[in-house]
Image 1: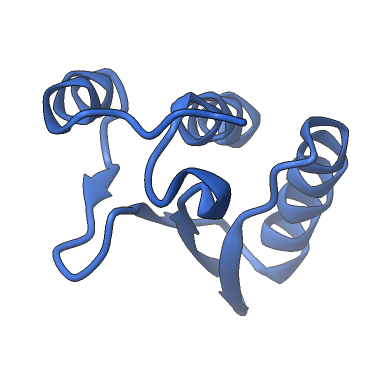
Image 2 (image 1 turned 30 degrees about the vertical axis):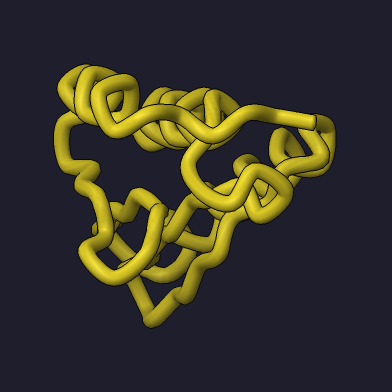
Length: 96
């Protein structure tokens, strides 16, 4: 089972993830991605979905046209874990 990151570990990890921030009302991280259009946003979501399935770690997200709002947390750990940091990094890399 993944372990929840300490507040210090989470802060340090977020420093390496520009655009990501901690949610105030729960132990999770969030970011809004904006793409050129719906096709680009949906294509990115598809690539992330394939990688997330391989990781067996899935994002909470919502898509509206060219925007994707993402929340990452590890429910089994009760908050942010290294899995979330890994998935956030992957999302950044796929977004270019």
